[in-house]
Length: 484
Image 1: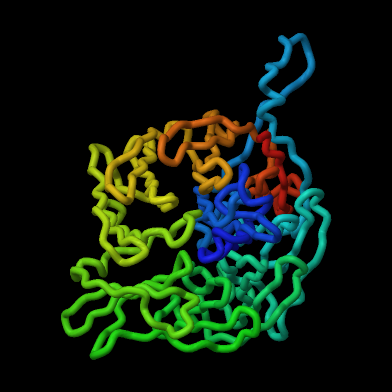
Image 2: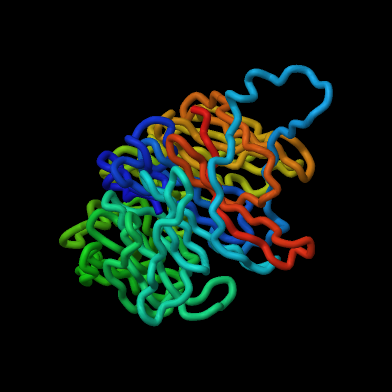
């Protein structure tokens, strides 16, 4: 859960918000109870973090909505040390060491199962959302603080908002059964992540919690697409404190067909076809009257574009639409169209831009695949459309998100080939592309799935084998010290 967009300049709360809101934090802020959230689903192999706070961060897996098998995960390995006659240790080793601060077991699972996990963190609490329930742990020690009592008729968490607001409120979707990979979500509950209390709950139609637009939270509103696949026709808004149903968004006048529907960055974006007049309409999700903030005519090819989520911007960031990862169309907060960005098709490109697609502080960062296995990270200035930098991703970067404290991308680099991978935490200048080493993760036999962070620690989901037959795996949350 990340802090809502409208609150980024205030107290940013999200599973990634922690700290006084500014130093070393990642994409989410943690000021006075902010929270950051980490979302993980099976099959995800790269992580991405969203941002809402100054010093706290979270990474959410772009693939966090599918099921993953243990065998697809990467092992985190740090430098091994042993006895014997060896040279004096490198004095820089201690400087970069990311020691494990604590580890908290959550549940056991059979090997080969679906690993649907979400991790959130606030200024002093880390929240784990798994099929075993929703649990809160003390950020400094890992001590368990609370467990959410599910609403009546709800049993298994099946979805969660990607953010919490400045008051620490997020929303968890619950289902009744053990459907694969997740049960259909039939109950929505507003959770206070500070103490684990349920503020209110509502019954839903069959909601697919795997869709990012299924549910979101802001300072005033909980929005849910109460129907199959996050359908726009079933979009609802509820008061975040009381759960009261709010008015619907106003549609354009005349005979207009709703063609596409997106929710993100504190806004709702809709494409309409009004008798051949194609338009894009942008709404503030907190709007009291439901009226559009702006409406602009567009070409019919816009139906092939998808909204790219924004991270960590102050105020409302530009709306960026991706056309199959090669052409990006951008509108500023007032609806003014900015220069298009066309990613050049270089020899060896497989599918053009893919995850991560990050929009932060008027910068677009994309990753491009190469047939030989080498990826390239590319950054563009949204206001001018010009390329800022390009980095060949030979290390195998997993981009977590934007670190608000340093104003840089936060990424894990795979420094060693083979099964045992030494990973280092690195910062990449958002506008300069300068790469700076921050720390080295310790050797760990656990499988690391997703991450969130604050100014002092990096938190990750781990799976450890409980017996030699690998029939049972232990799911846990681990905290690592950030040497910053």
